[in-house]
Length: 151
Image (tube, rainbow, N blue to C red; front, side, top):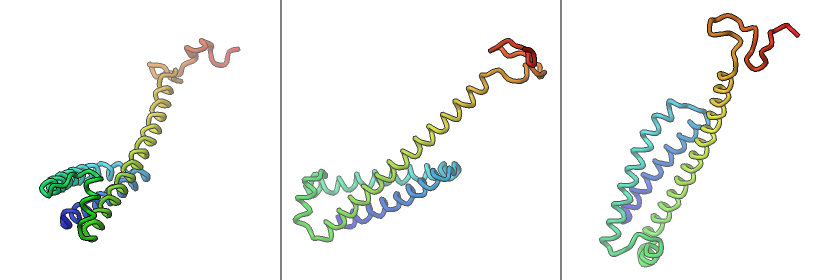
């Protein structure tokens, strides 16, 4: 189990690095890098899922349920090195989750800003323009129907 915990920990740490690069790209609005990172992030998330499934299966073969209470009880009877590896895995997973949630908030904020900008552009486009459909300057505007320069 020690090897499984260490392998999974290394994968979580690698995932954290991707999340940190994603965060930098979100802050600097580097869209090209975000696109590349999304593919890498997906691959690593899938790998983490496979490793977690393998860990759960290995624990079940040992007769240990993968929930917190059973893990703590089992680890109490195991070498300290195993408990330390498990705790490191839990802490790294919490850190990855926190960074991922932080990135989600950054994405949400960016989406709100983009939506506001789009709303402003759409509103401006819907207002009467200075030029008519024929390309000639307008002298009246639908809102007031007043000629420019006339009182």
